[in-house]
Amino acid sequence: MNRHKKKKSIRQQLIGAFLITSIIPLILLTFFSYFNSTNLVKNNIDTLIENNLQQTSGSLGVWLESYEDLLYQLYTDDNLVILVDNINRNENVALSINQMRRTMRAIQDSKDYIESITIITESSKVISTDRLNQVTTGNSWMGAFSMPQQRLYDDISSDNLIHYYPTEFAATFANQKHYLFHMGHRIIDYKDIVKQSGVVIVSINERLLNQVAGAGKNQIDPSKGFNFIVDDTGRVISFYNQNQLSKQITSANDDEQERQDDYRRYISDLGVFENENIEIHSKRNEILGWDIVNVSDQSSVVERLDSQRRIIIFVFGCSILALAVIIFSMMSRLTRSIDIVINTIRKTGNGNMMVNVPIDDKMPSEIELIALTYNTTVEKLRYSISKEKKAIKKQKDAEITALEAQINPHFLYNTLDTINWMAIDKDEYEISNAISTLAVILRYAIDRSNQIVTVKDEIEWLKKYIYLQQTRLKNTFYCDIHVEPQVLDVKVHKLLLQPFVENAIIHGFEGASGIHYFTIAIEQRKSIMSIRLQDNGKGMNEALVKKMNQCDFSDGDKKNHIGVMNAISRIQMYYGDKAKVHISSVLGQGTIVEIQINIEERSI
Image (cartoon, rainbow, N blue to C red; front, side, top):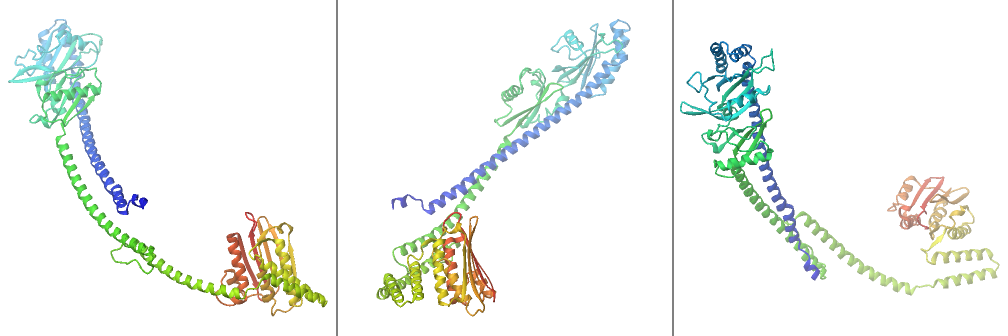
């Protein structure tokens, strides 16, 4: 009882199974779905921003290449080289300057955002065209530039590369501040490449970077997100707020992650955004060494994800509630049906064999099947008990009858022995032999009839039995027995072959004409002992042979072949699938019985 109390009821087990198989997986699935969708949205946004930055970087490169082409036209122009050389030699200076300005102005007017073109000659002469200066001969930006003129000249003329200079304040024109970035290259005379003639500087308004990089796309409300550009020295060269231009916000020696952290701190210090859902992405233009930085506010995305989470939780709660109602309803029906079955079993266990499990329409099909099976079993048990009572009564009656008619086998043997001596006294030796043989046969058959014997003992007894049959039938048949020596000691069940021999003698030879013979051959092939019994009697029809091979003795001539039926049944019972019996017969020609017994793993 204590052990029974410790066991969980089926209701508890079903609730546990419900939690394990339904609620817990549903919770895990819900959270997995939410986090998976969240990560998917974020990844998609990150991918979109990365693609936009990649596209922006490409566009910026294309735009700057177009300005580099104009710069190329200037520093490789042969006429311009000649004019610069004239100025350096101090020859026709005024004329040369005017011609140079016409060329420079034509180039300047061919492209938007070029605010100034400046040439510094080897003799330190400065010639420029400038949109931001009302004086035609002046230069608007060099006075405020962070690098002295000579150093700027030396830097550009030091090699044959295009030099970029970050955005700086240039001048105030029409009450508006203008910020310029510059690209410069030394003037090249292909007749004398190493000759230093001068340098050309193209000054471009920072608004070009704003337009290409989208730095000012949300100038009305930058809290929605914006782009800015940082050059290879870590200075801001394009920003929606011009006051931030030229600020040093990171180091040129920092790696990508360190620069990313510097950008995040910089944006945080600006105080543009009111929350912390800010994402920073950057893309470096490997040719220029510039970082295009995207700042985006993810608050709306987070808010949508939170809304999605609330919807998922609501749907999850409704699903759990609906599932719980369904499960508990089914559980109640199931446990109620089980209780009905259990109560009936308890009543039966207490001795009430007349009770059955009541069946109703609400009972699940599986429990109904159990109830029907139980009712059928109880019905069979009631019938079996009734039958057993009748059998016990018959057995008692038979025991009384057996006691009344009991004959001691020793009395039978002693009586046959007395008759045998009486026959000897009368010189009836044939009768004496028959009586002695009969006594041996009876003793062999009666003494532990299911005993296991050797093939040799069985054959010796079978010879005596055949001798009596020959005596009884006046030697109307012949018998030939052949046994291989290696099978003589094989163990078999007693009286295994006698029914087949009797069937051949009694039924096979009955009504058949001619000389009758009967052969028995026992031999061994590997692990199989083969027994062949053959007669030339009247044989059997095909239908009867088929029934006997199928052990079908349900009708027909069953009474004449009950010995064969019992013999086949005993062989199947003793040996199972280790033995096979096959009968073949032809009407008017005889019958053959073949028995094969596997003796490999057993001696019987």
